[in-house]
Image (cartoon, rainbow, N blue to C red; front, side, top):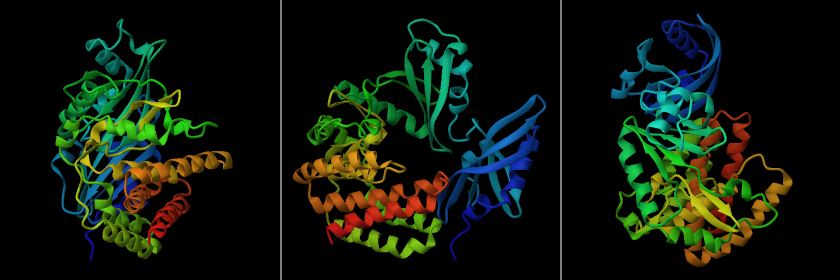
Length: 403
């Protein structure tokens, strides 16, 4: 029998008692709550966040509460949260932004402290006040990472990466390595002792928006060229396993949310594993998470590349497959947008096929799609079941092309 990873508790009404206890302990009264986001690692652990309305002595506020449950007892960093018991189980509960694995988040989340960071590191030409700074959460993966946009009124925009302690030095090193080689990564404006990496805004506009333009935002050759521009020293970094190496893990994660799809997921995972068996891991410099959300374009060319945390040795097919997978699974497009993206795929994939093995490209893209298929459930999208099935249909179509 699989170990109890807490997913059943954290997705049930039963978690309400824990949330209420945590809010009461903090001096408030829980008025209402809804599940916001869930990260499940089957048979190991589950972390979830909840949007809540809380009455405090000073008034009513919208809050975000986090809860982590584990199959095999608390982790060391759980002690930085409040520990509550549910029967025989202990869980860690925290109130945003006091994430137990992201110590810098509490400073990055408030204009007063974030303005002080920008001033201390002279990231801005003239000192700013908190009133001159707007903060917006871009992404938050509880206990993993967060990114906030910090916009100075009438001035620069920065992106604040909130990192775990063990990743901070490596991520900083990777940015510097690419910048020194002339690769258009974001400039580093500050790096703090509580693991905040403050980055300047890239020029151009995101490829994620430009893919819907009536003209092609860049060429397939330009996409390959920006990857080929990475310095050889990237291949000397620690290797990050490609998405395909974890395809069975992600298949189990998706199957835990949609058990009726487990048989198809197992079949697709086997096809990927068997089709890629025997291929060497590769020694090319790779980005590791290369897709339209990571690129900026202007005047038909790539002018910036984001999220270089994952660079390291690998196979070029992995990067190109990642891009194909993301473009193949964009959700909630209208008919015109869908036609634009399909045109890009039709034009770009044959060029990619000339650079890497076409069979490998499609199998690796299918593996990435299966990893992405965890997203709709994790983010508790309104129609997550349908969106997940559509993603699996896309993965299956790629596998069928080479079966």
